[in-house]
Amino acid sequence: MLRCGCTGRGQATQIHILKGVRDMARKCMTVLLVLMLVVTMGSVAYAAPEFRIGTYLQLTGSNSVVGNSGRQGIDLAVKHINANGGFNGAIVVVTHYDTAGSTEEAVKVVQKMIANEAVDAVIGSINSNEVSAAIPYLNEAQIYNFGLGTSATWMQDTSRIWTFRASANNGRIAPQDVDLILKLGYKNVAIINGTDDTGKSTADAFEAACKEKGIAVTTRQQCDSEDTDFTGQILQILSTDPDCIFMSLIGTTFGPFVKQVRNMGYKGMIGCKECFSLEYQNVAGAENSNYVFYAYPYVGYTDIADCNIPIMSEYLKNFKAEFNELPAHEGAYRGWDTMMSMWEAAKIAGSNDKTALRDAMVKVKIAGLGGELDFTKGDREGYSQFYSFVLVDGSNYLIDDWLAAGGYDKYLKATGRNR
Image (tube, rainbow, N blue to C red):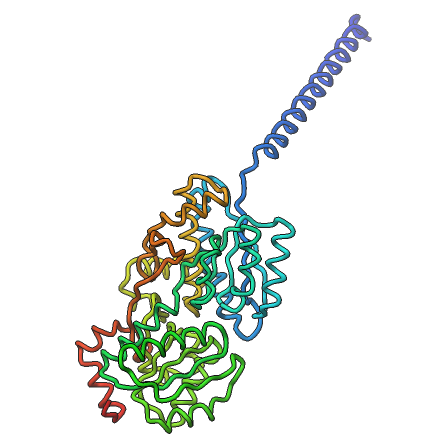
């Protein structure tokens, strides 16, 4: 039998090699763990900063379509902003809080955000009652904030220097609605308004403008925001035989009122304090919604092809791609315009400090979805001039174009009215 004389030496050599391999493996593992720890610590130490925004919106309840439209507009804007550098490099993070349409809940939500120091900025409800109740706390805490509501009253206190608005002020819209009535050649109007802050204050501004411009108010009726039957108010309105009717209502009452007043025989034109949105049209019915007119920054669209405003058309395409639908309510436009205004202030300030952002707002002047957003006037409001529309067969026409094309004559012929 042949034997290898170096067997013992070979085994020792093999053992030595294996030990070296194990030592090397241990060293590599140690280095790897150290590197992982360094990377982990670095990611914690150098995590991207955040700019935290809290919202209080009616996401459930009878007016939830409005609140959720605002949420969609905000979320779409945040996605765009973060894809383009955020707020001075900070990622924008939004937390939405539900008020269920309650002013008490809105205050609780805002107080919670303040107490927990959970936000750098706040965007408030489309319901102006909630905004009116909440913004005193935000201003006392010196929190940079915007409201999405349209009532004139909560922006009248000049001491509230932390509050801004990038949506419409109905107090400024009302006189332009009166101008539309004059343009149509009408001499009088009946008013119906809600008892909520926006409904009442807008009707007050509208009635004052009527008095100033020589339009007689035949009657002024009121209703609660939860009303669904307007028979009594409509009978009072029809008994005065008005040239037209002006609605200063809240979201859930627009559609039912128009449906009922049409079903009770009224064929005249109806003015609205805001855009008569798709949500309202769906409740009122397509035919009943004809000949509603309004001065407003925005209108609703059922087809992107109907929009001939480039900035709005681009927005609608992006909205459809993100949510697979078009906005049900123009609150989606308000949410976008608000975020774009805040972003521009951040660019101007070059800082996310709340005082720097607040002070930069008076320098913001950008193209909004409803026209020019100009905060340089110093009144903390963005919009001051508005488009004027009439709704016919589901499409919104600029009223001057509609009149020039003979639309009013067609309306008179279709309805059998002489005014």
